[in-house]
Image (cartoon, rainbow, N blue to C red; front, side):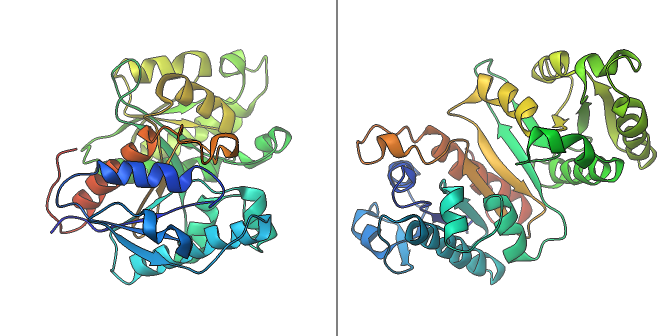
Amino acid sequence: MRPRLAVTLGDPRGIGPEVAFKAGVGFGVGRKLTFVGPDRFESDVPDGHDFIGIGTSDETNASAGRASGMAIERAVRGALDGEFHAVVTAPVHKPSLHAAGWAVPGQTELLRDLSHAACVGMLMNAERTRLGVPLRILLATTHHALRDVPALVTRSTLVEQTRLLAESLRRDWQIAEPRVALCALNPHASDEGLFGDEESTTLAPAVEDLRGSGWDVSGPLPADTVFLRALAGEFDAVVAPYHDVGMAAFKTVSFGTGVNVTLGLPFVRTSPDHGTAFEIAGSGQADASSMTEAMHLAERLAAARFDTDSVDV
């Protein structure tokens, strides 16, 4: 038995349905997906795949957000009940989720709440980049204003997120001894306190805690070199202290092949590394490459985690 994947269509006004169906066409013989979204998309589902409708939607923010959220709720419910091994989510519009009543920063937090997960992590994963090698970056803090970041980058958060990353790499990626680097917060890792003290007061103690627990963690290492070192094969993953320092490096070398993976859930969840792209929705121009990667990675990780047939992707 191959892993069973649910694919939510995201904001119905965006490119989510288009990239989901395009990726589904080429997913592979004998690999059935279950798409979840507004009823009107049932006729667009590629041959050989299933569909679960969640009602109607219109073009308003609240209605589109409601459809996006209801699709995620249905997919999560199925995953928790054993109907699916993995959930692949198309992009949503965060203001629309808010308009529909989901007061969360994004899908990661919504998935956490729906699954009652104690701790989740946002991992940006590319099994192949423009340089031909993998790059994995965990965002220790996610969607926050930059001015709030220093207070959020705590010793306990870094330990929790890095441990979650290392455990996931060992279980789902089957890397027996994962090597993780902790990216510094300040320029040049503060140059011994010249540009801040978080490296010595927060990041270095977190690294000591993790090493004391037996994890292979290096750092804190300057942001201007740590990602190059990871791309050179020195590390299996990097923990970035805040969103943009990690995302800028990641998308520079992997846009179109990158996948957002939520760690810490009782099921596998992946998503493409782009947004709703309202400006090109309905034009047929949307590139489904990242969605294709998200589907294949979800299948591979689910096969490793659950008792399913192995897959070659």
